[in-house]
Image 1 (cartoon, helix red, strand yellow):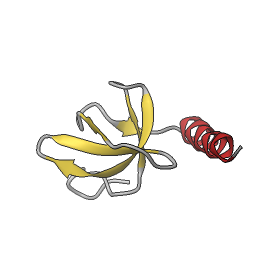
Image 2 (cartoon, one colour; image 1 turned 45 degrees about the horizontal axis):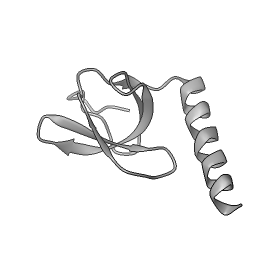
Image 3 (tube, helix red, strand yellow; image 1 turned 120 degrees about the horizontal axis):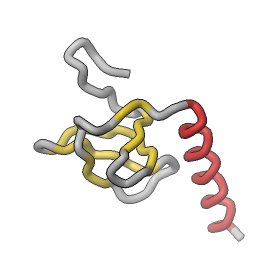
Length: 75
């Protein structure tokens, strides 16, 4: 999840209370953490101090929403 310095590792899913969304941590850009929606999409900036690990239920919900979105786009 995080290294010894407390920094997030790319690919970990976190909850952003600012947007009330789960995102995949990508990298840091200046003072912000860059998050990407589960399943792809436009990245957004988040305050790294507010992020927390996504719960198992939040990870499941985000993955299910992404799968449903992909299915709807194919129809």
